[in-house]
Length: 459
Ligand code: GAP
Image (cartoon, rainbow, N blue to C red; front, side, top):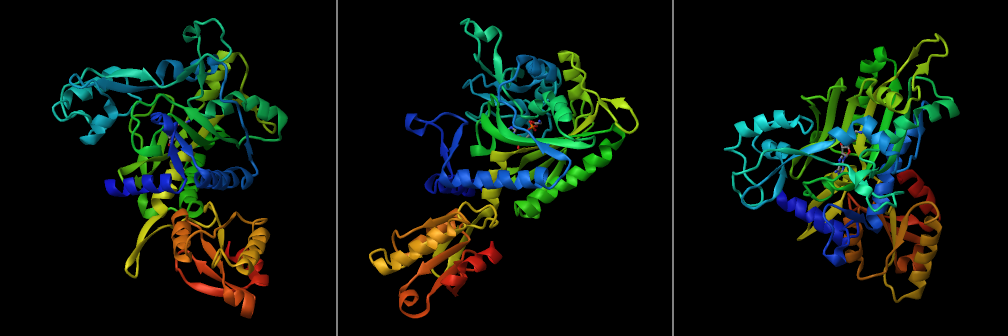
């Protein structure tokens, strides 16, 4: 299993999906950059989510709030006092680890949101079993909660900024709550309605393992659905189904590798919380959380800002603070799921091929166009013309490097669904080209003039 993780990481680097940040300086822990194919794949996943959540729902609108917000937002939300991970230090090698993760390794469940006392009781009970992942010793300090918010000096020129820091947002949804009234006043939404956004979030994660699964800078795709209290459970169950279906139908994920996980220890304001988990090479882990957050968020921001965030029903005149059903997915984590799920090794005759069996909609490149030989101007000319025509409709790539077999392997590894080859028959006989299908590897001759129609049907 470890092996398949290494293979995926290696493919990501080799083919330009994901690079370690600042690599020429030795890297920068838990931060990654997305290369030419990674950025296309990420945009396609984001677009699938946006279409599914915003454009396909007439009562969900989009938002793009800033990464920086008033520090008061993070006090009101409870992040300044309570957004933390329980950490313990190995007394032998001084490596720090997340206690909830150490316990999970030995089959003991402890939610990261437990208080220090609660988690230390469980930790103490199991300390004979828990080993340091770095040196194997079984000798830890007590667990202490470390705040995950990342601080900055934005707008503070005192030189003493640490005392009154501004924060890089730890989750995107707070930007939605603080704009609740703006959206209500400036658009025609009525409860029930949703506000969705995609954007960066930052967390001082201590465990920087498992590639892009858990990073310190990442992107979230969050939607907050505002409802009446009595509708919350019904809407919650509806959203659970919609979100599950998104992974299966829109991202093409193998349903057998997905499962539900219910949170046992809820934060005091949450009424229900379930995660969609995917079976990564290192086991089942969270991809998305679906939360019934009650009226906590809008109530907190009403209290702390002094601005009334209640809603008045235009029909009944009933005034209330809406409840929130949240769907919260990681974009970079979804990309990792898509890569793990699409990664396939197959025997082709005596050889082995690696192929990313991505859904057509997600593939970074849809069509690759090859002249059979790069030193034959008559073939290159036609291939270029086909490329120039198709690229106005789909993301295409022109490739004349190496032999055609090698070009197929390269396109298979980046998940390109179709490759077109212009050969001598194209010029001399039939005005047709060979179109090769990524998954079946079957080839068919298609007239150049019919290519556009052919791909309109296929893609
Ligand atoms: N607003 C609710 C919220 O932020 P969360 O469970 O902390 O809930 C939601 O995060 C999703 O964001 C997770 O399911 C995961 O996909 C993604 N996520 C959270 N922390 C992450 C990290 N450090 N790196 C990558 N993705 C992360």
